[in-house]
Length: 352
Image 1 (cartoon, rainbow, N blue to C red):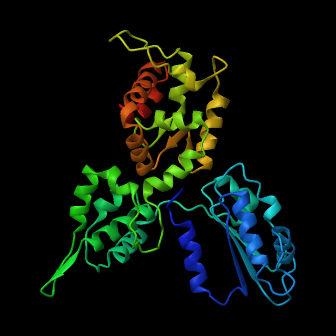
Image 2 (cartoon, rainbow, N blue to C red; image 1 turned 90 degrees about the horizontal axis):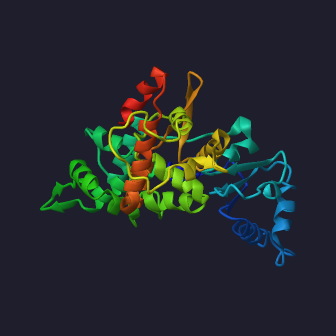
Image 3 (cartoon, rainbow, N blue to C red; image 1 turned 180 degrees about the vertical axis):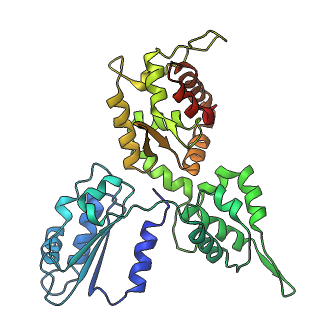
């Protein structure tokens, strides 16, 4: 997921072990052109005879690491699912390749060495917040850490904001408290999360929402719409079985209670070729998972989706003017999925 601290973790590792690698080659892997540009630039630093080197020369050099040395190639932000990395992966026993990505499918390049970062632990979140705010223990901020979803970028941004608004008057510290920030966050969430603090602890130049926007722009339209569709639900344990059952019931209420506005069709998003298709929906889910915008879990042979609370908030804030349409669609699924399976109703309670 964007903003969980992947690049920062790599930087911290290299700072802790500065003598581990004789050469560190950093590459912006956000696109094929950026990879080629950075590889070519590095190749031209290799000395005499390399002034006209191209990116292929860099790959060749990385495939010939000198005996007794260990090099590391860092491919940072390889998020684009359509990007073919294989051509940029030289092979040598003394070359370490480290890839950071929001695309969880990148893990297929190294199944045994794939590390998936998630939310911080409470202790890690507290440490990040304290360091960014330049505060010391004791303090009680669990409510704010929970509201920010234990996400590194949000916690650092909050801590930096509090530090910048703190002051010292006549030698007495006047901190901008976390309680003040939390109150402001709850009333002006979108404004706060759209911008990055210029003096941020880790020099990350994007705000939470800007980071998520990068993933959103790369999504196919049907995936964007389904993400909006999910946002009115509670962010934990959204049962896919509810969508399947509602589709089998033609998205009609089993009992007539109140007339509904049919101007916005639910079926256009969940159907393929005018028919319900579970593989089609699962394909959309796989795409969203590849960008770490949703996670999935299985229980009793049923699949459930989860949204990070800040992903849900970002999605709701982004679609504020049209949220009523997606809310109607979500309500239609919840009310139309009635059947003899009482177990399903238990999973629907948090979403009502």
